[in-house]
Length: 278
Length: 278
Image (cartoon, rainbow over all chains, first blue to last red):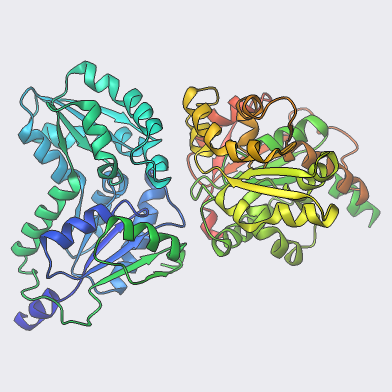
C-alpha cells in the first residue's frame, strides 16, 4: 500500500473543461504546485457547455472522466463552472479518486470576504440557472444575498480576443448594472473565461468590489485535498518527462495557439481524441 | 415502382443544421412548398459548427443523416453553411437520395447578379476558411473576385437576441469595412443566422450592394430537384397529420421558444434525441 501511494504521488492530475477556459485553472495549479504533472482535456468539439442542459453536460463529463481514467490520473479537477454545477454531484458518487470542482472553493471565499452580505455571481446560463453558488454560499452564510447574472456573450468575446475593447466594455456595463445598483461588495467570476476580462469587469465594478477568482481558490483547495490523501508529488518530474499533456476533442492547433496566450509554460503539443468513444 | 414513387412523394424532407439557424431555410421551404412535410434536426448539443474542424463536422453530419434516414425522408437539405462546406461532398457519395446544401444555390445567384464582379461572402470561420463559395463562384464566373470575411461574433449576437442593437452595429461595421473598401456589389449571407440581422448588414453595406440569402435560393433549387426526381408532394398533408417535426440533441424547450420567433407556423413540439447513438 505504501508503495502504491508512492506511485500514485507521481501520477498526474486530470483537469478538464469545455475548451480553453479551464486553462486559467491549470495555470494556477502550475503556479501553486510546480511538482505536479497535469493531463488537460478541453472538449472543443462540443463546446460551449454554458448554454446546454444538465443531462447533456453530465453525459459529456462522464465520458471525459472515463478518458482521464485511462490516463491514470490521481485526482480530477472539473475546471468548468457549468460542469461543476451540473455534473460534480453525480461524478463524486461514481468514481473512487478525489474530485473537485471550481464552484465550492469560489463560493467559500466569497461567503468569507463579503462585508455587507451582498454577493454577485456572473457565469453562463447553466451555472446561474442551477443556483449552485447560492446554495453553497447559504450553507456557510445563510443570510447572504446572492444575485446571479448570466453573461452569455462574455465567452464569445473572450474567444474572439476582445479582452480590452469598447464592445466588451459596453456589454459588460449592461450585464453588471443590476449588480452595481444592488450594491454588491463581492463578485464571483463564475466562468473560467472571465479572469481574462478581469480588468474590464474590475474597472466597471469599481475598487470597492472584491473580485473572487475561483481558479485561484480551487488550486489552494486541490493542494489541501492532495495533502490530505498523501497524494502530493514530493519531487518535480525528471527533466525530459512530459510534465503537461493536453488533449482536445477538436482543433488541436487552434487550441495550442490560444493556450499559449494564456499559459506561459509553452505548450508543446496538443492531441485530438474522439471523446464520443469513451 | 410507380407506387413507390407515389409513396415517396408523401415522405417528408429532412432538413438539418447545427441549431436554430437552419430554420431560416426551413421557413423558405414552408413558404415555397406548402405541400411538403419537414423533419428538422438541430444539433443543439454540439453547436456551434462554425469554429470546428472538417473531420468533426463531417462525423456529426453523418450521424444526423443516419438519424434522418430512420425518419424515412425523401431528400435532405444541409441547412448549415459550415456543414455544406465541409461535409456535403462526402455525404453525396454515401447516400442514395437527393441531397443539397445551401452553398451552391447561393454562389450561383451571386455569380449571376454581380455587375462589377466583386462578391463578398460573410460566414463562419469554417465556411470562409474552406473557400467553398469562391470555388463554386469561379466555376460559373472565373473572373469574379470573391472576398471572404469570417464573422464569428454574429451567431452569438443573434442568439442573444441583439438583432437590432448598437453593439451589433459596431461589430458589423468592423467586419464589413474591408468589403465596403473593396467595393463589392454583392454580398452573400453565408450563414443561416445572418438573415436575422439582414437589416443591420444592409444598412451598413448601403443600397447599392445586393444581399444574397442562400436560404431563399436553396428552397428554389430544392423544388427544382424534387420536380426532377418526380418527388414533389402533389397534395397537402391531411389535417391532423403532423406536417412539421422538430428534433434536437439538447434543450428542446429553449429551441421551441427560439424557433417560434423565427417561424410563424407555430412549432407545437420539439423532441430531444441522443445524436451520438446514430
